[in-house]
Image (cartoon, rainbow, N blue to C red):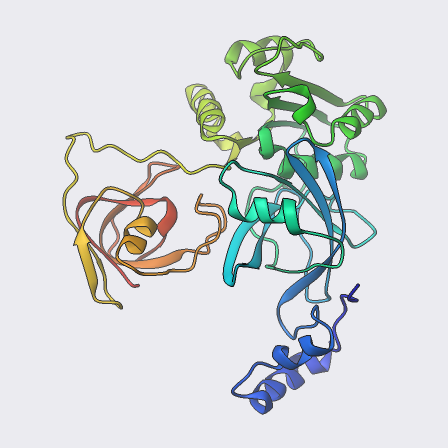
Amino acid sequence: MPTPANPRPGLLAKVGVPLLERLATPHSPDRYLEMINPTWSLREVRGVVTSVHRSAPESITLQVQPNSNWRGFQAGQHVVFTLIIAGVRRSRCYSVTSSEHHRDGLLEFTVRKGPDGLVSGFLHSDLAPGTVVHITQAQGDFVLPSPRPAQVLLVSGGSGITPVMSMLRTLCDEGYTGRVTFLHYTRRAEDVPYDDELTRLAAEHDNVQLLRVCTQEDNDRDGITGRFSADQLEQHVPGWRQATSYVCGSARLVEDVRALWAEHDLEHLLKAEQFDPPAAIVPTDGEITGTVSFSKSGKSADNTGRPLLEQAEALGLTPEYGCRMGICFSCTRRKTAGNVQHLHTGEVTTESEADIQLCVTVPVGGDVTVDL
């Protein structure tokens, strides 16, 4: 198994790296380093998979030892995995599930196999200890505030459990004494990764309230059933209006939670992250108009109303992307003309120069030009 360390750092990182890059031109020094050890790199974060196990019928949990370029993470953040599958680079976002205070240096991820998941399917079928993976530094603002709030509500559905699991582990490791409610929705009880650990954490910490809800089974193991609703919160989570809250899961769950918090003017207490693409926006007048132009490539076409990433790909362009859900920002590009709307927030950007995420942005109200 490769040893994930790097032959650097200190003064070499500041002075030696640029010199090595000049000497190695036209190739990257990494090309030579990885011939010695595939986890070595001057700048990139690479890691070696140290373990893989099935944590639920459709989920695997893996641990990765990153090289010394890794700068750490905050609970709730994600990284972008890049893998070569059938000769093509594929990138996907996965949340770190470890506690911020884990001492073994290992990063843990849990990946659920999607029905059409190219990367998740590859990870389930081909990943084994010793595999070297390329990951980014930790990203995202779906994180716990510092100092910690007096009360925390963590709502998740399906694979959305991963970032909030990191938050719960972190709070428990810190000896956090405020009220924590962990409200998780799943179709079946057996689909819950970390089920035994959740039971243990709730038993060991009097301030942790565990509510696991099965939406397709007559199973009230924690005394709660059915899909997310205001009545559930009123009955089972007293004081939810005062909690700093997080929701991660399907678009339906996230939209339901957002709507309830908006109804009570509590948006400032809620952070949300969803794990499936947002629904397209239908113009109020029912008409999709305008032209989408990509200035660097010189290509343009009639606006189809689809996200700009899809419209670029339909023209044969291959912009960089990662999650395709508005999480990783890999597809961020500069809009130089026109108005666009964010599919998650509904916010319309009218400034002539603005950085936008192509995967979750659609043109509205006329022609749009993107620097691509």
